[in-house]
Length: 216
Ligand SMILES: C[S@@+](CC[C@H](N)C(=O)[O-])C[C@H]1O[C@@H](n2cnc3c(N)ncnc32)[C@H](O)[C@@H]1O
Image 1: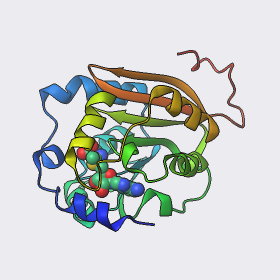
Image 2: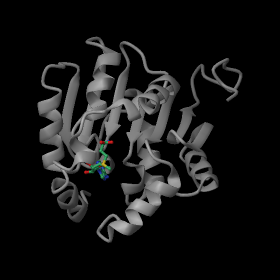
Image 3: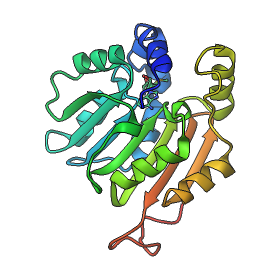
């Protein structure tokens, strides 16, 4: 179910500064929030759809360590190639050229799913959320993160005038409804100077609303 028009669009972007440049000082507080609020730690198994050139992938690899796993995937062959090059020294990273919608990993495969700057590009966002929930273990966390806020995201995509012009981040109440329909519990959303951030948890075996990690 790869959207080939979008894959070609992102192939052509692989050397663009937004895609290729390492994170700088401006991104530091945004990255820190992402890592902190995602509750990332050593040994975790992380799914990262839409990995791009792997800027976040290498950071995730460092956090999960060699006892963890990062499965980084993307529909764009050029992006996957760039990502594989960037993370070559990290054995805990697997790269894959596929659409998230086509990924067939067993249930409970991941502790975290980190959608970094990719969620608006899913053609069927609810279906994508359901697929990610199915691969998340009970108690696991799904994150949707952007380093710009929803107004800036949607403005950028609308102005792109290309295959991504309709790829929008829905309003907060729609995001809440969709994550709930997908079987997750929304813990919080932020849309501020550090960008957009959503955190949702999969309930199930031994993980309930009385869990002390709830309440934000
Ligand atoms: C805006 S870029 C973000 C890349 C990277 N996460 C970053 O922040 O630098 C979005 C990426 O998602 C990929 N993508 C779009 N739709 C996808 C899908 N359905 N499954 C997997 N990857 C997808 C694109 O090819 C592109 O590389």
